[in-house]
Image 1 (cartoon, rainbow, N blue to C red):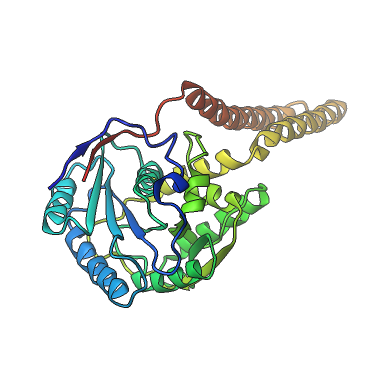
Image 2 (image 1 turned 30 degrees about the vertical axis):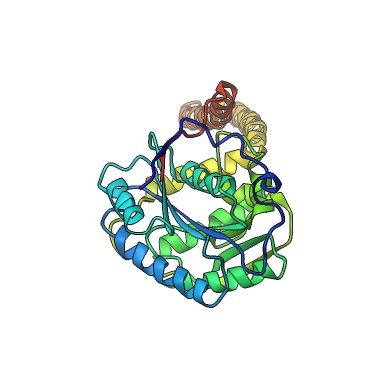
Length: 341
């Protein structure tokens, strides 16, 4: 087993693809399967077994090169995830690789670390997917066919959301509509199950923002793209790493990272507050004229709460952007790789 301890921050730069491997091979490409992992010890061995079978199937049929790899990225897990990744690497060093981040940096940064590692090691394309096997691994066959036909990015898109709860299905639909209305570009019902060519990965390496939202960044890269529809399955083992609180945070991260429209709401809220204040002033004058001054007390209290709420919401929106500017100005690395297998 070979250990390569690295202190390099792969989040800000990566070697250019042309320097690494020369012309891209689309006939029998070197494909890296990149899987971010956080506390996935319960089901990781089964995931590896399924992916290994898919790897051998693709190699035996000549679809991909034997140099292809399955790369697990441990995002600072607190369970035995890294031990299992090391065990898998020891069992077959030619197929299984691993990247261990020195600290938990979140799914998007862990995924980026894996993609940039795959680029640096000379892949022709990388397929990113979750480690819980909810993404249909059989869809990668069509991913690779589309790549061979010239597509630089292939999106895995859910064909239906029948297995989701009513709440999750409708909130997801609302998020994509709001995201589109904000002027940001995204692919509805697409998570992070996609194929990216070496050229697309090289373009991605030039995006240096700390507030990372890959679902919004990748569509802005351009290049020739396509979609592969699949049915998302149930989680094989363990619990979801995206509870409601995390999903809301992720949605806010995506919206504020790609649109400044929420800032315009502050101006709108101010105009509404002024209009309400004018209306309440007229109402108070009329009440005084008819000798019903006491009625104005309730209206005044409502207006105070309304204006106070609008001010707090506006400050919160501005605070989100100021916080992001603050984090970007620090120029801190998005992740640090502790060990590479």
